[in-house]
Image (tube, rainbow, N blue to C red):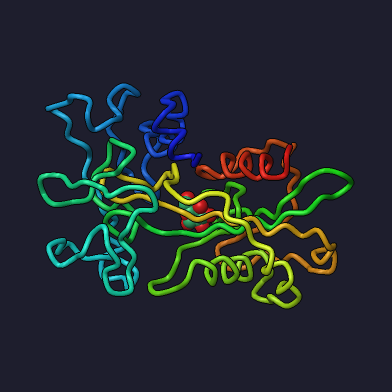
Length: 265
Ligand code: BGC
């Protein structure tokens, strides 16, 4: 059963839609605050006729090659739109009265695109490179430059790019300082552990993050000879033991929990 099914079946896991409801701190790179959405009002099906989320699209995203414009009528949603994948991994999403895609996990207190580039799903990919060290499972983590939190070294899927290529590219850029030699054997050993929605602080009512998480487990000691080196969006890189329970970016702790399960921990 996927994490998504768990969420649908078990409302107690609503914390998946928690980091993108934080109304206490301003939304990233802005002074804008979200409208507070109480737990019982997150689902679109729960009646809230006067709901008026703060509307915000970061002006610095306008005109960027990776960002949409406001002409939503020209976009093909729930579909592959040219090279841009506007399909969700898990649902055919609905639309509001203005034709904007609706976040399938419910209200966030902020409408518009926020800092995200795409209306609807914004696709990322997260490679978890893992190994056992002294009998303990560990994975490669980077420190993100934007929030300063530790995270899996993932990144956005470029238009037309295969997720498998994004996984290798992002790991190379962020954790190997661009030098991806020696990794081919590790890349041959990937197992998908999640595909779907992410509780990302950038999410809004109309734009949200989704990801594919793939575990590349090194059982042959290949990584012992690979020098980790932070690059691109990463300030720092290191191996983290899964049992250290360090706090991680967005839904990454949930992904590490799935990793533990996959390795029977
Ligand atoms: C990050 C991924 C993360 C995704 C969703 C991307 O910017 O690089 O690691 O899973 O956002 O939060």
